[in-house]
Image 1 (spheres, rainbow, N blue to C red):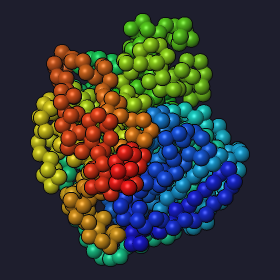
Image 2 (image 1 turned 180 degrees about the horizontal axis):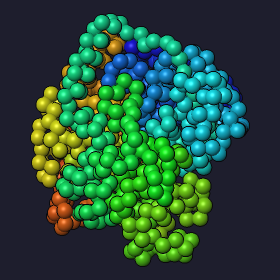
Image 3 (image 1 turned 180 degrees about the vertical axis):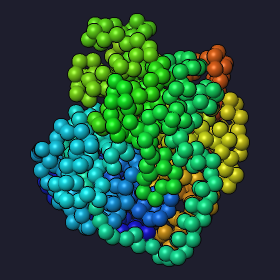
Image 4 (image 1 turned 45 degrees about the vertical axis):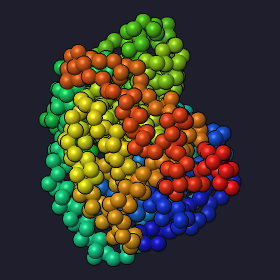
Length: 619
């Protein structure tokens, strides 16, 4: 199998048994790799009744055919499981080097089931996998865990994926962290790893990725690097990180403020990537084969003194900055460091804390509920205190540790929580770019900007090869087609797996795939593969109770603001959603892909569960 190592590692922690398993070649042909391939395995291994934290629920680490090659920004891997945050599809991918090291060690992926009797680590070196006692690592943060595990096995160049206290406490806000602070953050997959008592996985290898024609592969990769060198967004991210767009995003009303209720925050200018570069930044870093180098390395010198920590991304700057009206960049950087240390998702943690601020200032929760804490807008110090309380499960942190939806439900205000299907909304306001409303509402993992980055399309990234042209960001016209198309495209990315910041010509992307697997994949076929994977995740959720009525936006995002760049704008959501369903081939009554759409996509295996009457008639 060109481009693949051809095997998965199966781990049963309950029995302490591991074995190599050949990749299912039919699944690889139909789903390529990454989250698409993992979804096909997860479908087989779960049903409507499987509980996310049960021993039998799988935890899957998957790579793709470009991972570990010289292709740009392809050192990633994806983690897939039933999400304890949403109860449905859980997917989170992350950068760094773990995906590449897993492939060099001889595996395309890992499927973990069961529950160990005590904390363990999984050590994989050049095709040999072993389970080791990790009780001495339990309770330690992600930095100590990575360093101690590498030292214990004398593998300084290895990559470690691990959980911190957040995952150990099985919090639905917990992620899985690798290579310092690269994190598969969203959906609570760290809680799944914690429920299995799997503290960490170390991967290291010296193998190579089998390519059918290395000379051809080098040529298409060289062309992709040349394009990226000239890409404006690549230059911006390299220069000022993902927070480099803060000033512009605030100006157009995209960056959220005061828990999504104010259109402008003048303190945001102190949170920008350019200010970070001029004040606290001490270096930059990059993932495997990444020409972008968007990591920021910073030093905080004030109250929250840390000599070398990862700088906050845009999402974190908003979550712990503008969302609570704080302009203290050093404090935001420290909050980011704490979340990383504990293995927590900064988007969900920051959003849940900001929601608590909002409810407190609305009089819905009181000092009796918070244990005496006063949640004042602009007070990032209390937010930092709450991060520690969440991770340690102390006081009001126990309530916040369940996430925004549970917090709202507890105080009779679930409709005010800015979340979709249990996952907090990312830091792009759909009133600024209306296509994001469809992306949030229909994303398989709950509100997610990375399942379809319409914000880039609406900011002017025309992709004519995909049929995506310039769109009016305040209008609803053309957004249904564009949202579906960019979702399919990023679905293919998540199968390869390639970072969405890497955007060479689409023909070049499928060219790299073709050269890696030794089979010609056209751009239309690549989009079809993305659409198939997208719909597989949809029916996975349909099987677990998702219907059209779950495709909606939270109340606060459907209210207009009259200050800032979104003045008076509200997405014409229901009209866009109806058009989106028509384009997708989804049934308006049930929210499921129609039998004809399932057949067209080769998903007929789901007919008996989703459309039993149709299947019975066919039989």
